[in-house]
Image (cartoon, rainbow, N blue to C red; front, side, top):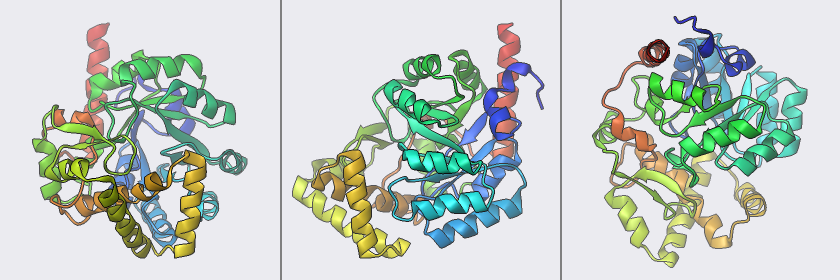
Length: 352
């Protein structure tokens, strides 16, 4: 669509796509339809595997590959008991890239690199970027405080230029991006493109229920909040009565609720009790969590599922980037990507 050399970035060359736009792997949201639509339209779609069983992941990868021949990625959690099998699946299925919401283990990076699969973790601090680069990852997503879901304290406008100055691999900016002007801003800060979650959640191909999408569209810039009450970690969500209730709940009630959600998540994903305990021990070791924090970690996936899958806003949470306050419509993925690229080209022409 646009042949401007500034928009053909090192990330585009690395993964083999036309446009430097990534759709992030959002749990319960980034399924086969959304991922395939993004890649088919010239961006880079990422399938969210953390909330899938192994068999569901196999089916989803196959579905994406039936829908498009374009490259795509899969988002993994390094602390899942079957992560080694999932990594091997990506190798066997010729998936282009594995992304990680947190830091991947070094042995997983080595395995993926050895078998030709790229790795791209999300980081929220410069020191994490340096560590991941030293471990040999191929690219990074630097997510600023404006980002949705679990997020760090540093604004995108400060995090992104710092990270791009200290690593020599492609870096994508995340947190606050939704249009072509933002893409050019990210490139000016040294990034190789942008990664967007909320903007892709609010598209026609997103399978999130329409009532939930409407709630996102109604939110203003001041109606998101970063809370620790969901799972013990800072997480940006839309401020709702559910969130206010969680924040008022005592610690004992929070732990009880989290334990109940852990059992529900185990049943839903087919995880054995032994595997759940083993996964918890791994999380406690790698993330230095206390036992109450560990139990609280079970809250997020089930509360998110209540909204994103079941459409029960009154009992779920709505993870979101602050940018939801600027989004007003639900375009198709193709129309969105084409518009972002056209706006980016127009912005470059105006600046020149």
